[in-house]
Structures are given as C-alpha cells and as structure tokens.
Length: 150
Ligand code: HEC
Image 1 (tube, helix red, strand yellow):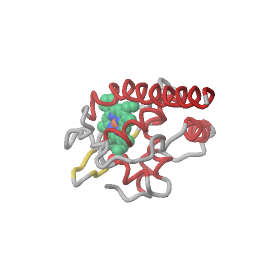
Image 2 (cartoon, rainbow, N blue to C red):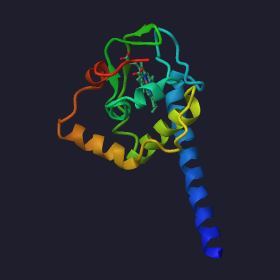
Image 3 (cartoon, helix red, strand yellow):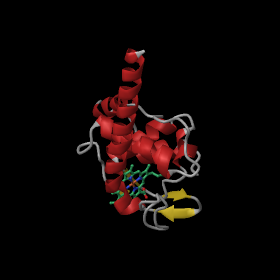
C-alpha cells in the first residue's frame, strides 16, 4: 500500500517536472511564435495546428527535425505564406528538452491539443539526431513537402 502511494507520487512528480521544463524551454520559442503559439502572419508560422502534422505519417519526425536542424524555405500555414528561417536548436537543446518542449506545444499550446501527455519521447529525438549526424535525413523543408500542411 505504502509502496503504491510512493510510486504514484514519484510518477506524478516526474510528469510535473517534464511539463515545467517544456514550459521553460518554450520561452525560447515564444519569442517568435508568441506565448499563444499563434505566430505572426508573414513572419512566424503558428504552432497551434501542429497536432495535425504530428498525426500524419512522418509528422513526428518532421517536428523533431525542425527543432534539431531548423527550417528554411517557403511554406504556407493556415493560408499564410512564410519564407523565413528558423535556426537549428540541436546544438543548444538536449534530446530531453526537445521532447519536453514539443510535448508542451502539442498538449498545452495547440488548439485543439493532443490528449496524450507525452507524445514524443527523448528516445524519439535521439533517433532523429543520430540520422541527421549520419547524413541520413533530408532537410526539414523537404520533409514538410511530403506532409499535408495545416
Ligand atoms: C528567431 C525566431 C524563431 C524561434 C526562436 C523559433 N522559431 Fe520556429 N520558426 C521560425 C520561422 C521563421 C519558421 C518558418 C521558417 C520558414 O518559413 O521556412 C519556424 C517554423 C517552425 C515550425 C514549423 C511549422 C510548420 O508549419 O511546419 C515549428 C514546428 C517550429 N518553428 C517550432 C519551434 C520551436 C519548438 C521553437 C523553440 C524551441 C521555435 N520554433 C523557435 C522562427 C523561430
């Protein structure tokens, strides 16, 4: 009984910790994409419809790729055109920070948000990071062309 209570407690503590770190890392993203994730038409695309991308085949890999290796080239999102440049955060953020920030966006910032509390794992990020290091992954812009953009 005591054992169960202790493990439940530590489980909820670790979920809380992950959520907090995703929220903290999101401060970096919200400088451009705004705290609401709505972005600025013509400058920074919205992050509110990322669950629509996540749910597609290759969508999870694409989202991880954007944070790890950045994104540049013309895209459209929710009817607005963007031709900007987002830097690569692979050198400055850990796999765990990248998983947490994407989970925070998918479950807290997106509208409607995903129900799954941690759709992206640290391991998912490390797999994509390794592919990039081996030169085995296309640029984010190429990956996006294979998806139906929201
Ligand atoms: C300095 C500004 C800036 C910061 C900081 C920034 N981004 Fe971006 N982001 C952009 C721009 C600009 C684009 C679009 C690039 C283009 O037009 O090709 C973009 C695109 C994206 C996309 C692709 C959206 C789509 O519709 O395919 C995602 C996902 C994303 N950013 C997530 C993040 C996350 C997560 C962070 C924080 C770790 C972040 N961004 C930080 C400027 C920024």
